[in-house]
Amino acid sequence: MYAAGGKAVPVTPDPVTDYVITPHAVFEMGRRGLNEQIVRSVLSAPEQRLEVRRGRVVLQSRVPLGEPARIYLIRVIVDIDRQPAEVVTAYRTSRVSKYWRGSYEG
Image 1: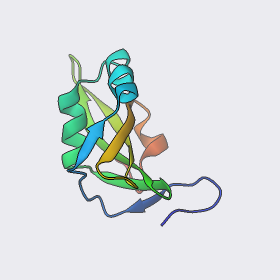
Image 2: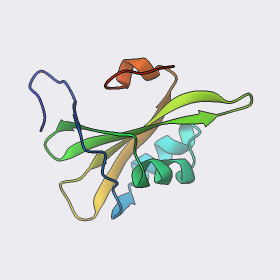
Image 3: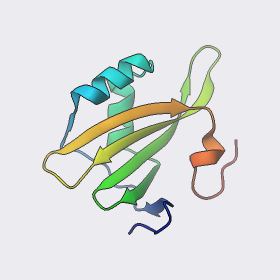
Image 4: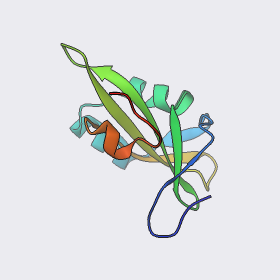
């Protein structure tokens, strides 16, 4: 379920297994330094799944990246109202607490 007022609503973090990564998403992933393996890992085992509007979800997971390792939130935006689902874009952010739903110990 989604909420009025632009607030994402947490739903069960089920994986997305049947999907395509759009050319736009591939471009943005490359520009943002995210490889396909990281995105696929979030799609297959998300820590959180937020419905942002009917047919679109954000799958997100905390992932250690870099040397020394630092925790980033990887967010993958997916249109699930089509078959197969389409990965629209993906990005990483160090501002985990801004996007994390529920308590975050970071």
